[in-house]
Image (cartoon, rainbow, N blue to C red; front, side, top):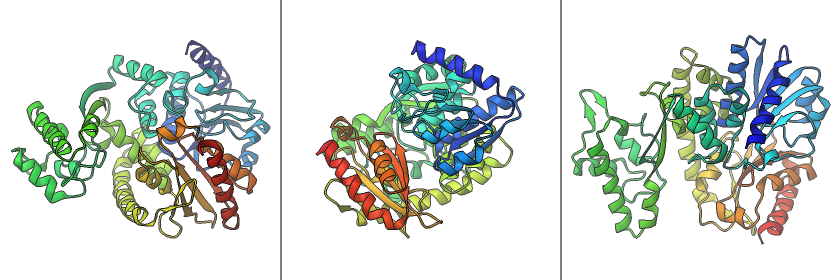
Length: 437
């Protein structure tokens, strides 16, 4: 880790020599958070800096910027074409292949890019600013609870008074959701009689004498006192044990984090909710709105919240479809969401359908506006331990079919022409079989 930090200082010197850099970042939560962190830090230093989000880094994208000063964030580590750019720096945590340009990537120093460092916390190592955005990006990449370098960043955030860590209920929406929706639309773990059942959630809360409103305002979990919180947690644990799911009760309580420099009554106070909001902006074609939210621009949050509601509705509909349409294709499970699930959320749907006990990864399909096929894949911890590496699966199958692909071992994606889809799936299936049997 000391070598990682020292190399970050060298990368900072290279960036300092740039006069008018263009920051190009990925469009997911980690990409938007890390891109915003880099952009904001450079702007504060007086740099003439621009920022741009993209979904996939293609040879065409590289050709467009080859004569500029470029900083790639949350992408670029596995795209050899970046070597054609004279003035370029890469800040990333994805798998590295064939890139010889200045780069800070935790994998170079034996630090896991899957769970110990995201692009946002890697960017923080360079600039040492905006620790809240660093932790939001890591959260968006499902790297919680924080370990490794992420843990170091968390501790710095706590020391600076920007972040608070406590042990509490881990269900999503502690801050922004009214109590009924907080319980009814949290399904990790699934609570019998409550998950996806607002009437059941309401009856549960009333049985515990928990007030749902104060004057004309719906209360959230974060509004409750300690005793009320304990009653809710104990009641949920009891339901899980009654349904022979006592082991899952352990996941109900764990580390949770709050961003003290962000408004407590907004999703920005909780890194998980902040990350979901950024994901919504990126997945629905407005990553620039996500950047504005990160920068605290006026009215950006209001617009983002409208998009988030649309995002949640589409995810609910996507999950409902996926649960009935999933098919077993031998070495993987397939969700064919073409013309049904938007390409911006197919990866999220795969991740939410994928279960820890599945013995095969999930591949999801969606169609892009330009007619190509977006492919997303998700695995689980047990499959990774057996040798699954979806990043290499997507990259190899994509390159052999004239497309592009890459990502993490546990989550990766690709894009190919429709006529090459069956060839892609055939190649991907064979590679998965070679990796995990």
